[in-house]
Length: 190
Image (cartoon, rainbow, N blue to C red; front, top):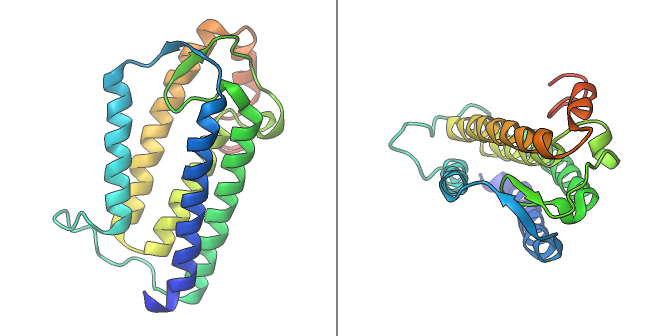
């Protein structure tokens, strides 16, 4: 992976940026009115740890370290571009969402339905951005475990999105109509 060092460093920096942005911006959110129970939040934390371990190649007992993609400059650049696109979408969506954001399924005090920015196109652009970042990282890693990590993230975020939608449908006027006219993760597709 030595020939991919610059691209690997770029992906690492993108993940550091999104993590730092999330931590800092978490201080400027609205107060929580209703939150997902602790076991559900712990499950997502555990899945996050598993995904990181898979992407880093630390879960070798499952034989997920088999190479799927070659380590070339082209795959490194493709990975960088996908991760950068995901970072841009995730941060744009997080800024647009403002004080309504939470890392868990949560209803905020004064929660409002956001339909501008990336939310005009899809209901969960933060998840879309994070999934792109995981996909780009999986391409960079090039091993079975990276793509398995992407699949785990996709399934976990899909379930989380459905839980959010149930909460928001129950509490936000206009949310069912918003759901009817926007896709969940990919504009015009899914």
